Length: 358
Image (cartoon, rainbow, N blue to C red; front, top):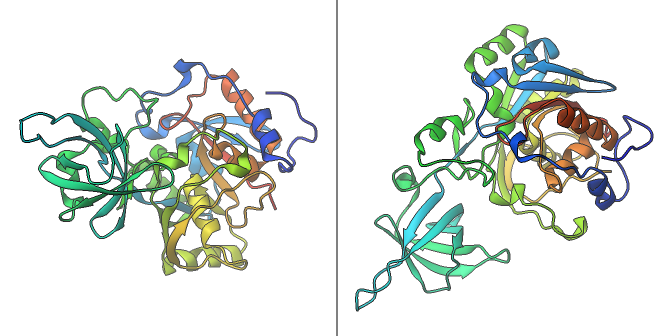
């Protein structure tokens, strides 16, 4: 990464230029293939005017009594399924199609990526469950209509959809638990809100003893969240993702802000949820779809601190953290991570960032 003046100032200006300046080469061996064990022994970089190294279980000492920790309690569903085509009248066909279910768009109709892609009218069998291709979305996802609710059957026919840079091996069993946060409750994501993977029940108990409060929101992570930006930033289309904020969570956030207590977002999905629910004065309870795209120069209104992993170059998430903490601080953090052996991406290490956008 190239040097930049005025360290610590919020990123502003052309997001394409920011993304280019934040580009970096990552050796493949730095992509974490397994999470730290125990989870809270992963490394934690604290990024402010200076950069300091910690272990994630140090978090209670890094937060203050009264801080409000907000996390995304979405749960990853077993959305990757090997389907088969039906046999024709001559007993031919029956080939396999890889299906990645994305979300239920309407009753019994799911959007899905198919490999190889199929036309409307084609029929697939996911286990013993019949689905017909009934449409196509702008991004190439197909619409599959099932004859009944497929959700209760996913545990039996599907696998967790791990990111392509993780070598999953043949066994799905260990990932069923490891690729979930310990507080995951609401099924619906096709990728984990990975900043939360560092928490353990013991760490949550230590945060309670410290006097750190907590609130939960939900954003069901879609496959498009991690899609690299392949052209001009202004032309990048964010996939819609469903979020919900309960009245209890909205009230907890409002009270914390009114009392001058810090709001600590666990993960970029939590930031996107809070900013989507922000009405200019407070976080509103409710649910909806969001395509929010936070880029340098954007004011991030709600969270004061952000816990996040180390992201891909050329990604929307890298732009989000640059908007949140400032381009120069993010450059310093990534330079330090590259030089000091930090592990990257979903199963890697974490950072604690301060909001400099407001």
